[in-house]
Image (spheres, rainbow, N blue to C red):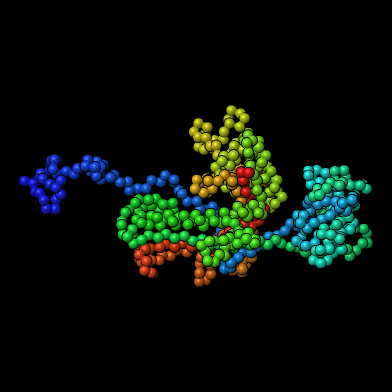
Length: 499
């Protein structure tokens, strides 16, 4: 006989046997529940990795190094060019043989504040528009500008040199009276008469160009309260750092850590210095002293080479190869470093693949593809991608840069198509080591001393999860780093932009 009353609701009276009766089952049709609730949900413990590996860091580890520093600023110097040359100069108004030189037009002059051309030096003059019209001349006299360091004998802000042509008594047609910024010139030697002295000769002191960057502090934090930490809910995961297994509430902490590690790299790629004379205003801050840091993109745009519209709408192999050859000619004018690495967006990487495939000897014949896999057997596999190639005297190694493709980072913007980074090193004097060492052109400096290492700090506060540092009913995981990027010899880097 069934029981009634007591702790059992009126709608649920237990029976002595396992049988479904009208008065011993839960009613899921009474408007307050749903039929699906009569069964426990089928729970998948394993997290679905629908975005694959989501981390973006690793680029700087591939191309650079990390080294400690103890100051608020890192300063380095880079050599100037060896030979003396000027571009976009002009003839003095109303004359044929007198050229005005402005220090701002110096391509290389030994680093002085005065014009480095001397009497009796021989020059090659060319038109700035095409560079095809040239003439050889010798310098007769040099007049320095009067306002340079309070010295000089000139009458204006520009130096003046008087030249004498070698081949005829006039200046070559096409070079005469060509207007403002119309001439380029460089020194290729000198000539003196017999028995002459060097009283008119001046010394050129070698100079250098100084650059600097400052580290920035990057921070993040993950917080979980005590109640949530006590509610156990395991989930099986495979994390981007190569580990797998079950995580409890620290699943979110793991992702915060990975995201922070990406920020450590992204901030050094995208960073910008605060403009001179400008102070960012933070409405909610009582004291603001932001200075920024120069990242990779900004360093290349400021001191390196920028190429816009690579390949464009041209057919593969024609416009693309022409564009690439223009880049090689620019590299010839710089350090001419033989090995270079290309980190490209997907679209630009495919442009390079098409460019190289179009240059393949069999491209126009019946064998229109390079196989490359499985002993080069066409019946087994095709390989339409290229990871390395040589053009002229340069070797290039190509790879996709995930940062430029990810939909939550640079994949949102099409402004940057890739970068070309030289695989070279520079010899510098390290004050901490007290010796000369070789460093990659691209490397990271982080703040550290004997008592404090700020390369990657991580600590826990609160009163949950084993930490007992304060009275808050929570656990906070803190992340901090202080670092900057040093981009040396940026003239050897190339930034690919869309426009």
